[in-house]
Image (cartoon, rainbow over all chains, first blue to last red; front, top):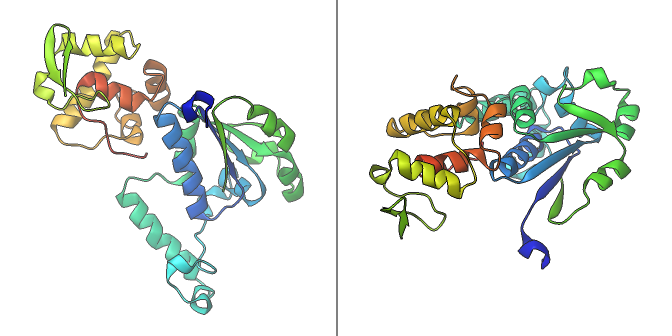
Length: 160
Length: 102
């Protein structure tokens, strides 16, 4: 912590999940960094790629199973339609606090100077093509490339 | 706390945001801009004017709202106020720091 007196210069945020609550957490953290004058980059890997997949980004859901904070019994959470219902309710609440939907949020991030990368390994695994992804994705890179971009003082890395 | 700027005494909080907008005038705005390494152009003033109007109308400010204002888009806002645009612009405009995360 002695370097730069612990000042945060850049946030490297890895998004590996596509559940709505995780996607929003990553987006808010990246945007919040830019708002404070901190650089931010995002690396989308595994299911996190769905957040930047043009055909999937509009239908992300929150998880109703295995999430004790939802206060829905696991058996009930697994019933058909529960995820959609919970997602609709959450989206309504988010609209009230002026939270943008995923595609608009991505535009805000890109315009705010958040640099975005997609994971090559995950792209190959899901058979996604570059053109399937949001235009703000600069490049498809390897994990090694991402580490290279993370070099420097005051850089923090976050895995979501 | 008190601060002397452009030959006038103003009240600011510990982060340097003015606590009484009535004390603000254009010369203070210019001096605050210099402190924040911004050289103000007419374009900057348009945005500062918009921000102050929203503040007077008690509309909470956010990056998203600024982007939808029709006054400036988010990209240009970041170009004009490169480091922490909403924070810097509100500081120069003499209004409190917006408590927004988006």
